[in-house]
Every structure is written in structure tokens, then in C-alpha cells.
Image 1 (cartoon, one colour):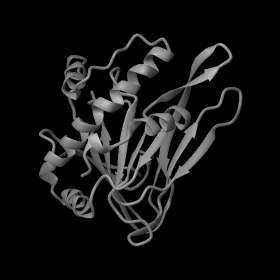
Image 2 (cartoon, one colour; image 1 turned 45 degrees about the vertical axis):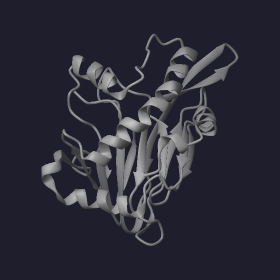
Image 3 (tube, one colour; image 1 turned 30 degrees about the vertical axis):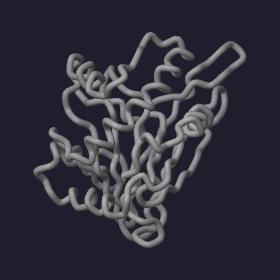
Length: 232
């Protein structure tokens, strides 16, 4: 895993401000991706398993980790939070939202637990050929952090085809705008959980965004999702 201190955050902030997402290449090594993929078959690590078809979320399966999180998952969650909290607070100021996110992730979790959100949300997802995920947002309660991360664990073109991440943004008085992103194995895709601030003629407004996964055409695709807030 690359260290947070080696990442140049200013261009990433610019992309998040302008598009609501950004990609950091090769954050995880192939060995770390393989380690995370192997967790999928160890049911002792998870609190629940969701069949997407049952709830009409798409076609595939995902599992929520239980506490304590595996060391690598915990490290990713804790290390990526502080630089993202800086931008999150800037967004709250721009939108005149009376929320200030703490500097350390453990203090955000304390806020979640006080609000009754005590279930961990990091998850691992698996899609076979024909699998997909409908457009959605991962909020889980009144307390939520405005960014989340997906790490693709499978290698595009070698392990699977298709399965791009799709992001849509609601444009005022118009149809939604779509972006299609194809991160590869080990890449970190950071994107907004709910909305991003957009400069309008009367100041900043909230542009709501959703995300999903396009149909996997062949093979299988696995990913790790890091959501920073806990669930009710």
C-alpha cells in the first residue's frame, strides 16, 4: 500500500471539486488485492451478506465486514480519512452547512455511535458475468461523511470485462449527467457520497450524485468499498 504522505492531494482535491470523483492509481499492490479477495470466503469476517437481486439493487453480492475490521481495511479507512476531512469541511463551508468533521476518523465513529449508527460499513463486493449495481447513495443514517472509496481488486481485461463505475450528477432544470470510470486493479476511486458544491449565480448549490456499476460482460469482478461512517 502506498503511504498517504506520498500522495499529492491538491490535484485530487481539484478533481473532486470539479467532477465529484478522482482516481489514485496503484494504491494497493497485486498481493494486497489478492489478500483482500481471499477475505470473501471467510464468513467469520462479516456481519451480513446482501444478495442484490433479492432487494432489486442489481445482480451480485456484497458483504459488510464486522468489527474488528481486518488490519488492512482498518488502515485504509483511518489513513485516507484525514486528508479527505480537510476538503469535506471546505465543502460544508461553501454550502453553509453547520457541520464540522473531526480530524481523526475515530472521532467520526464516536459521533456515529452516539447517533445510534454502530454497524461497520466497509464492504467487499463480487460480480459474475451479467452482474451490475443500480444507481444509489450509501448514507446509512443522519451522520455521514461526504466521501467514500472503491478499490478494484480484480484486473480489468484479464479477470473481467465491463463492470465500469458509473456516476451521475443531477443538473438543475436538466437531465442527469453521467460519467463512466474504469479504474484497474489496486486503483483507489474516491467519489462523493451524496453531493458536491457547484458555483452558481447566487453562490454554491448542492449537485446530487449517485453511483453504480455497469454490467460485467465476462469473468468476475471484486472490489473493496471503504465507507467512513457507520450504519444504524
